[in-house]
Length: 244
Image (cartoon, rainbow, N blue to C red; front, side, top):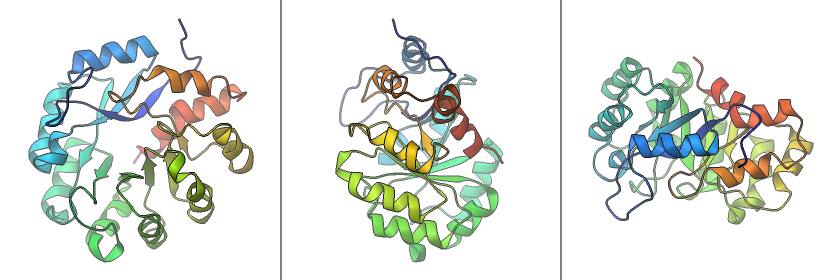
């Protein structure tokens, strides 16, 4: 059975039940078992309860679901139209959370500078990263936000072949943009990005439980990367993004 040659920190995983579908695993124990099978040492997780019900209740719930498991790192979901920096930010700092995930299309607002307001200043100053799915944001809005707050760590997740045309232009234009590779299945595309732009802004993600964590790890291990590049993508880049 394939096992990765480097430590792996999964940057795109979901923990907990969903209201609209059954998934292969929605428990902490199931996630840890899947991580063990794939050779994943750590995972950054958020819960769908914070997306479809209430951010603050859901974020407390993800801490309960993790239950002190050291291999799972909590990520909070924030709604820029409903949550305030003053109260929500205190909760983020108290919990030691280093990244926030937004769902602008689901929550019915555009991810723009005028909508973010004080959030952009606070996140950039606190070193808290912003995670957003490529299916949830218009590339023009992403460009505006990342260029307005150049110290803000922006991570674009769930990039698929339908986003391929804009991905490299965005990376060239936005030095603070990073990309989760969990759904990026364009042949030879990752190798091309590494050859032209380096590996410092690429992250391994599993998209668990929608996808099996192992196949993309297998692919990355057969791209011809040296160990340093492979470890950067699978582990080190995410560790750096979550540092204070």
